[in-house]
Image 1 (cartoon, rainbow, N blue to C red):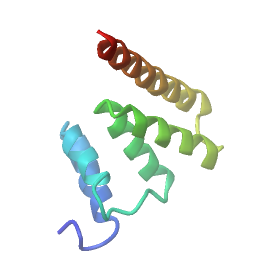
Image 2: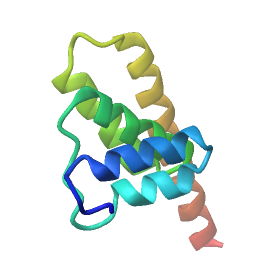
Image 3: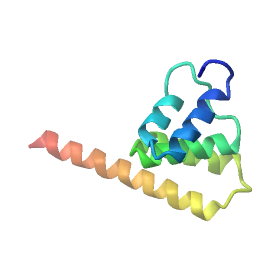
Image 4: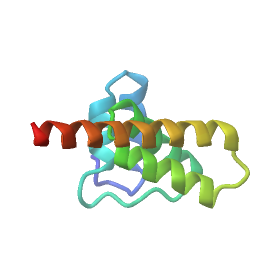
Length: 102
């Protein structure tokens, strides 16, 4: 069913998100063979699912792409989300570096 059309992964991920099944939704969008987002709504879905599942690299990439490709969106909100994702990514990286030194 998921390979029926190119929109299927996004519709399924959206359904998973509505059901609170964030990990399942993000795994659908990030699997091999799924095309990258091409609309603002698809980018927001990917960014939100990545953010909620603590995939900070993907969340940062998605929020950054939204800012650069869609200047008409609420930029303050997107900037805040990008900042949060980048901060968490840095904190986790720093923690891993400290643990490797121990």
